[in-house]
Length: 68
Image (cartoon, rainbow, N blue to C red; front, side, top):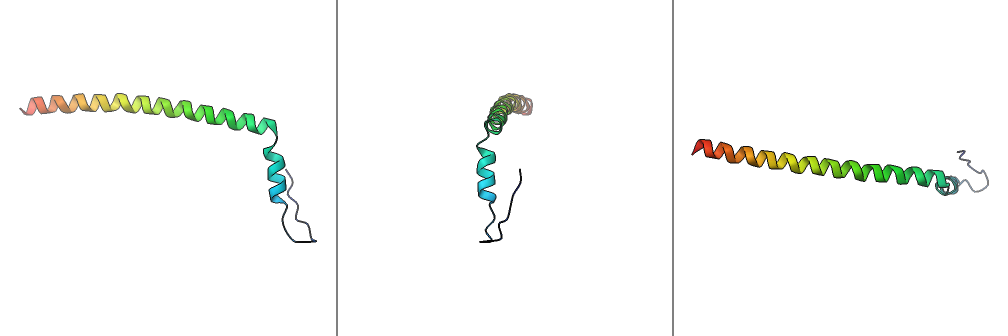
């Protein structure tokens, strides 16, 4: 990707270059893959987190029982 700065008006054409780059289908597919992977990872993390919370609750209950 080449970004050019025209000398006429002095405004960089970054926006145009980025839009062209964004419109590439490969890039969109890549972004889609990343997003789906992130959602999957997030689900796994929440799942593990729930399991850990349950374990902690069980441990806490046991500790309370021992204290009684």
